[in-house]
Image (tube, rainbow, N blue to C red; front, top):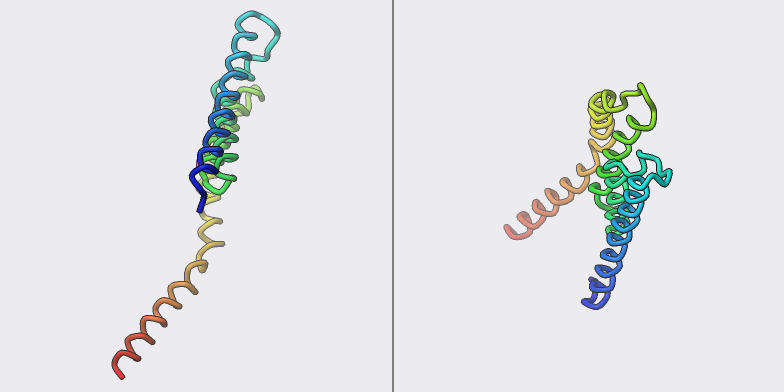
Length: 131
């Protein structure tokens, strides 16, 4: 378990990282609006989603799926902006359905052993308590 001081330090680092993301993104937006040659895709909301996903991933050491979701959504919409005529978002629903199916197939027996251990343990305790 984390100590209170390490939690505060971690939280402080995350705040600094988030602040840097917004400062850099805002600076790029200023540069784009002032005509300094900043590509328009670099100041789009999908890039902001990707950056927020990366910061969230770093915060939680990429253990939670939320960071991956932000990065994926940002990447999908950024791809549509970067490649003219390519409609990647139209492929997302079939990709999501297929990925879910693969996930279910590969993870179907993951919890089976754990459930059986609990059932057996419960059975053994009941049998011992009857004796």
